[in-house]
Figure 1 (cartoon, rainbow, N blue to C red):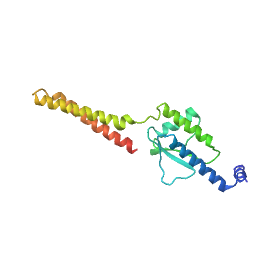
Figure 2: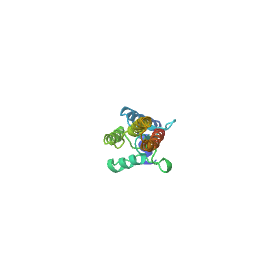
Figure 3: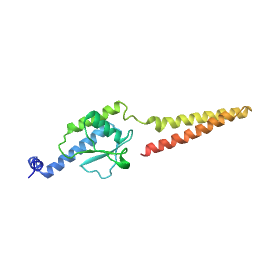
Figure 4: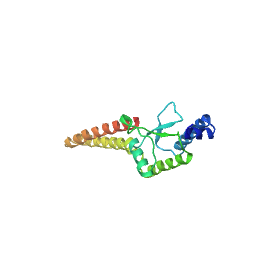
Length: 178
């Protein structure tokens, strides 16, 4: 028998190792929720082996690089079209709850540093600002029209603000759907 198999046997066998891995997975997932971290678990049928996470406020690859380079920890990156969308956190191997506590602390520190800042400005504020400015411009246009004043400038601003409003709404929809 190999060293790892002997260690598993010494700790109670395969069933005990499966149970330990399940406890680690549950511990980590509960810590994500407890700390209100900006991640979505993206699997409908979770394995105890790993937790796939979709960051809602930052690039998955950027988080991977930060955790690796600044905290000396490894999470599992993705490549290809999922590179910036999903990373995974493993639960198999020589891991303890202390390891997950350190990772959660690193996530919290990144959040505190606004690295994983909420994209509130893009989701809500930018469309509302554009809508307000568009409406204010409409009022200006109508007042100029009513008093027989020049309407070229309000028309130009209206066109620009219309494009900005549509863009900000589409951007919000895109960011909320990814």
